[in-house]
Length: 639
Figure 1: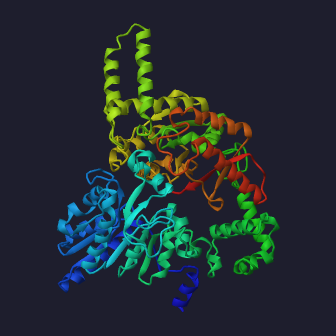
Figure 2 (figure 1 turned 90 degrees about the horizontal axis):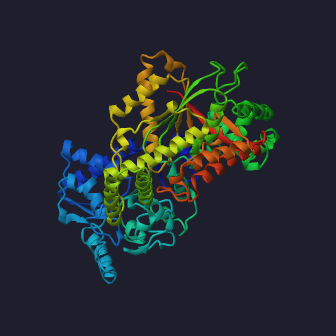
Figure 3 (figure 1 turned 45 degrees about the vertical axis):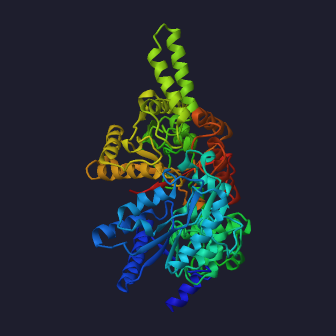
């Protein structure tokens, strides 16, 4: 019976999928399977042939293999490896090369014989590549074929660098990279213009010859392409769908990457559900959008014809369900994000007392506050709350080099205008200019350049916060040490980062905290900053009574928005407030037009914010609620 139930749940899935709670557990599992394979082959005096992938996804797998080598005696002396791909052209010494990646994360940390390591050669002439690719295939064949191939998946659906249009029988070859793939790689190269346009990759046909294939994917960013790869029709537009042809493949996902699969996203379509309130709200909102009716116009046939008959039977009549969900969504809407004084707060997202609250808005980067919740920020100040803003990092990697020179030249001219000697500043400027002229992609800036970039972002943040209405004494710059590396990759969080956060919280003793819950941030800074806040609050909660009366609200907006069924507080904005929010964002001139790290979204930050806020309001309107110009959304986090 259990097997039948599982088949029913997964009937939309065209290949085996295993889902783990988080990437750490999944990675340990995959590494354990690789280790078992190596040991089994060693026991037979055979070599293990592994196909390996690069990118963020397999790093934890490689770390666990290193641990098993160092602590568990796992030997790689009898392991032969073939990497999937390499950028072209690419020097093996470049930090972006997959040679450097594999050495850093695996090969230099285990006892593998360098002669057994094979990675496509990015230094070849184009004329030599066809012969190299044929030989690469022959080397795999001579080694006995791939025992296990590890794969990731790109947002285009590529496996290896087999981009859309790749044939299912393709072999190792030179390919042109998709524009989206190059955009996703731009952070590693210090800009999309520095990303190679080509790569050498194993073909889909080469991958298919492996005796076992494991495709791994983590995070919600991969969820849309995973749904296409697992449940979609086979198509050259999504090369990973060709894996549906193999009976040797398994997708190993974390919960976020699997979130859009039918059994998780709309489980009522494949099984009977336990209808808790959140699932019921999600289902009714989904149904409203599906049949294009406001919630209060949904009827029993709508439920029965769309997989929700069980809900109608168990908790009906359906009109009562409609009214219940409609009221719940309506009660999320408030023009009083700090609570409405002298009002019944039993149906409001925030409590009425104290009427004037102490509020801390944490902003991971110096502009996240106004981009993500600028309208609510303005509303809290206008309504008389004691609002503080805390900028957790300097954001000093996200300023163009040209801006540094412009500010330095302004300072030099200003010094001259007041009769000061600018010679020291001029010398620093000249050194900076020489450095920028020869600077490599993602090379660490000089300390002086990092200082100027940090000051540029600091002055912009001050300007934005002042525009919102804050006093200077309520504007805090934390410059958490984990961030101050000068590199894209940051240091691990330490107790110092947490203690600095504790000190600020003890100083303010807020009734409300707003923090970025926008974990789709491609730089990873948002989730790191949120976890620092969480750790600080949990430590404080042990001894400080005020923490128990503090509400922690998560905001989004710079990179994504909450789903409507998740939203617990929706703050409507008038057309005038939308313009005020836009003006606050415009204070961050270094991020205007084309920011250094735009991510995969080509829109400017202010455009993204306005589009998302308008879309949220439109979704509320389609559900049958009041029509507003825009809405900012929040979810409360219970710590």
